[in-house]
Amino acid sequence: MKELTHYINGEHVKGTSGRFADVYNPAIGEVTAKTPLASAAEIDLAVQAAEAAQPAWAAVNPQRRARVLMKMVDLLHRDMDKLAEALSSEHGKTLPDAKGDVIRGLEVVEYCIGAPELLKGEYTDGAGPGIDMYSMRQPLGVTAGITPFNFPAMIPMWMFAPAIAAGNAFILKPSERDPSVPLMLAELFEEAGLPKGILQVVNGDKEAVDAIIAHETIQSIGFVGSTPIAEYIYGNGCAAGKRVQCFGGAKNHAIIMPDADMDNVVDALIGAGYGAAGERCMAISVAVPVGQETADRLIEALIPRVESLKVGPYTAGDDVDLGPVITAEAKARINALVDSGVEQGAKLVVDGRGFKLQGYENGFFVGPSLFDNVTTDMEIYKQEIFGPVLSTVRTDTYEEAIGHVMDHQYGNGTAIFTRDGDTARDFASRINVGMVGINVPIPVPLAYHTFGGWKKSAFGDLNQHGPDAFKFYTRTKTVTSRWPSGAKEGAEFSIPTMK
Ligand code: NAD
Image 1 (cartoon, protein in one colour):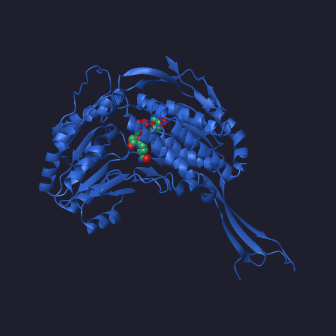
Image 2 (image 1 turned 30 degrees about the horizontal axis):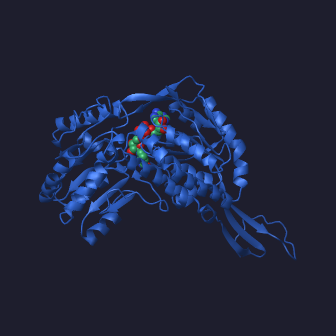
Image 3 (image 1 turned 90 degrees about the horizontal axis):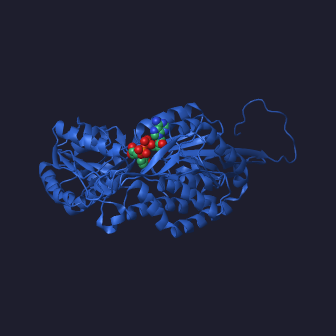
């Protein structure tokens, strides 16, 4: 069986802890590789290499650093098929969706080519007699990121592209479920001209994460994953004196107003609810039609579309709309939540439980399910299911619908479908959610805006990518300089103020 490695100081390095995790091909349900799980000593090895390499990288002028990112974009395009194949084989998503995963990361690399502009400081000429004042953004030093299984290309790139463009070294601890693509990305970046030690990949689990939190040299931690782990890393990382941003789970609602274009709504919900088997933090998992008549029309239109979704392995190409989920445990958890929905009184109008695919009986496939008459006290409403399950919560009024979104613990994304500008503007202005779609089901901002949720979906002050990323990965230094000419003043003992 294939034994994966770490990528430390420009070399593939075998794990030395003696601990490994199985990596599966979820479509066939078989172990295809084992990945090493790092000890604190292996994290320390990477930190030492990063610490040694970072000052020279920070001293490279921003434009030259940006040229390495330009080359990285070329190499990502060159290896797109290879990356997508490796990604699908460990994650299970379809090949077009895997390419989307790479492209959404690549777009952030492209954005970071603007680092020379984005890192420009501020300057005040003549802040006082003979006094100039300027602020500059300097890299933090050694930075680290911990990423989830569901976007093994995109989310690592969201972190390491701005970190590295700003002159930092970056240690990535990717998900142990699909670690191959992150390793490939580190190799590619070095092929693009990145010095050894600036981007390293250390595979691992909680032990590696705890070692990152405890390591004094690591200045910042970026995390994306489930909310309990986000809270753990945010709390402990901040207590350890690090700069930390953590992005957590989600439960994204789509409100469907009576005047919405129902064809558009159904297309949107099918893609956003069931694409990538619902394993997206921006998936729509709750439909909130306003008015009983709207709800009836919605359910009637959704049922045949959900029933005709094609579930299968990525190797079946265009014949597949969604693949398997990530593990046997995820499959069992999703099916158990669907059971709980039925037990708690929701109406299961399309039942995906018991789905079987001939020739892939051991694969982690879950058939798509659709619920009607879900209420807010049910587990299927309260919990993030992270599977191909759409819940419908019927409401009578817009205020009731918006109240559900506002009251939910998560606030990552949301959408409204309407033809009415007043309603759309009111929704966008009042809603307590970080990313809002108006007739757009998955409002993931492009690279030059920032990505981040509210409430229990994000912890920390700054979002991912866009201008916030350059703030997160740099600290500001402000210099006040005076070049005295003529008369010298004596010492001043009170705080200087503008006279
Ligand atoms: P996860 O929380 O299980 O794992 C994320 C990372 O944390 C992995 O690298 C994992 O090794 C590590 N980890 C797991 N258990 C840990 C522990 N006890 N202590 C320390 N580290 C630990 O998440 P996942 O299952 O890989 O990803 C799915 C979750 O990520 C969903 O909740 C999804 O909503 C969320 N997500 C959020 C965003 C966002 O931007 N808000 C984006 C993508 C995914």
